[in-house]
Figure 1 (cartoon, rainbow, N blue to C red):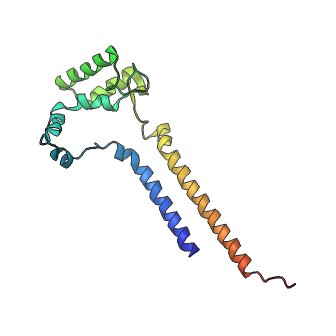
Figure 2: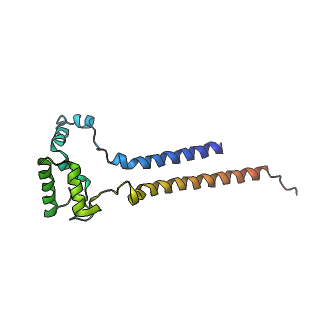
Figure 3: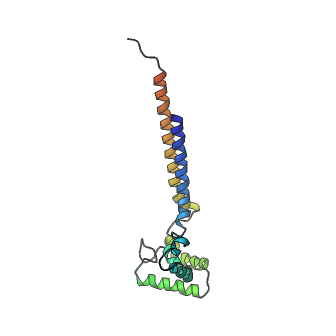
Length: 163
């Protein structure tokens, strides 16, 4: 019975660690599905409008503003942010690729534009450290429970002292 509980705890810990590992990838996916947009009263016109807009309107949502600390470029109200957003639209209209424009922005403003750290080099620790801490905590709980159940079993098997 105790072993089953211990196995269940270990499995739950592994499942949670895998869910945490997949969280950055899931966060990058769009939050609305095509079926949800099609079920709207306007017949999915918002999805069609989003498809027409292109990457220049989507990119500011994924970049931090160099002009408003702690805010996304799309949420920044400064005139410099508005001109940068307009610059993105002009670059898309000129036919430049999103990757080229992003490279130029990161060259101009640095990594402060990134809303999330890179998943390589030192930035990988932002993803790996919480997962490692969670797994280490699960192992610590499993070891603790195993020791406690063994100690309880030894106490049950120990002969009772005669009075």
